[in-house]
Length: 187
Image 1 (tube, rainbow, N blue to C red):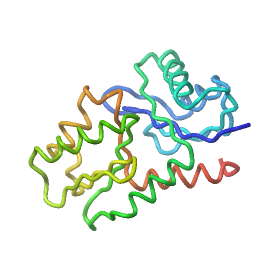
Image 2: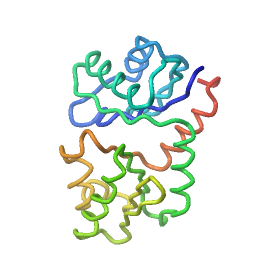
Image 3: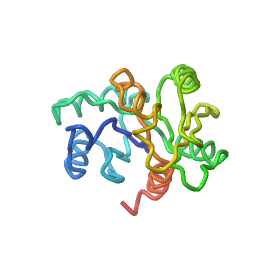
Image 4: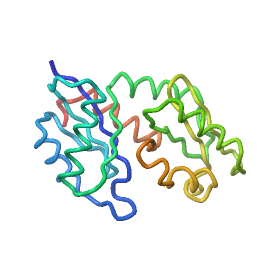
């Protein structure tokens, strides 16, 4: 039985880690996956898997294979269609103000959200900047143009400490991923 997943890769096409999406698709094909599609050039790969692995085993398999294929330290966050749908429902409950970006913080350790919230609460914020946890998802709202200049963005998103445990995607990217996951034949 096939399962549909999205692999969200950390740090693709930023800070010297560059890869072409066609090469990324080829890497996933070499791992035996089907219906492969990349979304944008930031390391979002949708695919079907028939492998008899649980989600954590599949994640570790993909990280090992990508690390070997591209000669870099791959960090992957794996989500099924239902998980992406739940994330979008959670993010829609807290719409961003007009001049703000809304990011989903993707993390496999829900305890990290508590740490991130405590960190957010302990630093200065940009006007309208917010951090909130809903269900098993965390979200960050920041004024447009302030993503990396905000104290939270510069101290968390780019920090080595979070390299293997956290990645982010904006709301629009998550919607594109969800739509592509639900229309596999259009790929």
